[in-house]
Length: 272
Image (cartoon, rainbow, N blue to C red; front, top):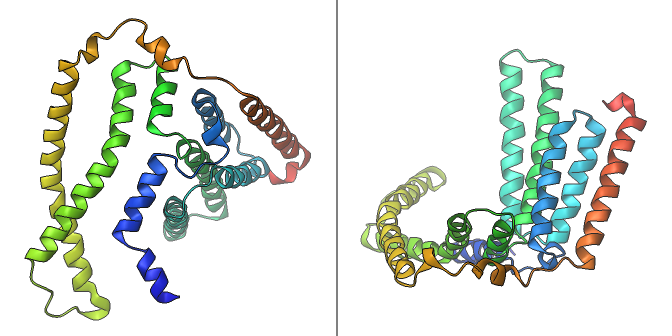
């Protein structure tokens, strides 16, 4: 079992997980919805936690975030990064509060902040893991965002696999040209330092490759008249967007859940 876990935790697995996340290949409820509705759903739920300090409401919103993540089928890599990040955030804020004279009131305030941050983070994961580059770009266009901004978002998503491939290629090239570490040290700390140093050195040639790719893309787009497209191009692109029964069901369920959450917060005032 330990060997199987080591085989899973590789650079190739991380690359595939990032691509699955960026292109929403895991499916889920929100991936089947209209992207405009998903964006509105996310904006509402990202704002609501900051409008209250009621612990009951925030705890229920946190549970709602967990349900949203499960419905969106968020991958293990993103979930792992979220758990590690929120765990370290709670740890260092608690230690800082205790070391610098903070009391239980300070810890309670930090707990409320971490509940808000955790709920918003999970709603963000559920929404953006379910939107592939085309859907997110269409949603931005539907909300009258600048055309270049919508294209930049889509282009950034599509550059992700290329960047991962270039990083792996440059990283492996550095490793093959470098001599092995003569003495690994305690727990192999010298090997870890070598790998971290190599990873930092990989970014300079990657930045150069990005500049070349961006320049090539700009010239190709200008040649094809990207900035002078027909006036009805936006209407043609957004013509396939439809609000379905699933969208209305999710919005109605979310609205009723928010009403119930705030009603529960008023029912148990001891948790305010």
